Amino acid sequence: MEKINLFLMDMSEDGTTTGVTRYMETLLRGLSACPDIEVCWIRLVHSRSKLIHRLERVGTHLEYMIPLPLSMEPVLNESYWNNKYNSVVFYIIKHLFEEKSNVILHTHTLNLIDLALYIRSKVDCKIITHLHCIPWKGLYNRNPEHFNRLYKLAYVHPSSETDLELVLSDWEHRSYTLADRLICVTQCGADFVRKGVAGALPPT
Image 1: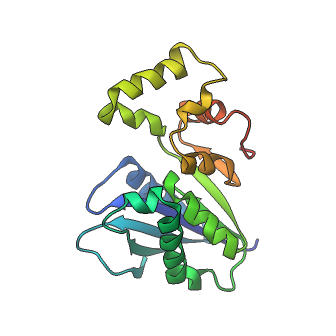
Image 2: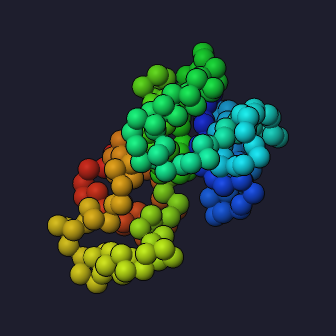
């Protein structure tokens, strides 16, 4: 069997441990037993102290730590700056894709879809979107009023006419509709994706 070149991609805050981080550690332990899968973890990290990108081998996989801009909002929400940042990241990592086939980009943060799409425009590869948590449920902590309204749409008065309101951003919608495959950690995540983008999905 020809080797698979798997690139895990996530975005995190330096020094924090999240459910995604724990999942990645577990996934990497499992993948270490698969000699036919070459793994590189591309870690986009928001940090005030780690300002230079760094590639190192950790056990059986490579890790490439790349700093995120200190001001993230324009990068995520303004297409001009998003494209500029993605082009810089690709310039840094493009050597990793040279002379490789069977390339898979496995994104673990939804707002990395545009970087994955940028890479796919340059490299023959497939994209997997991994949904770890339902994004609108994060509103519970910062916007309870909006959360309660969406909760009613999702669970109290569900309607196909309002399903797309559960998708909070354009990049979230692109994550579901432009990836080659979707993976959900939970059944409720899978149900949300089926509802929230109403039939505009790639095969699962």
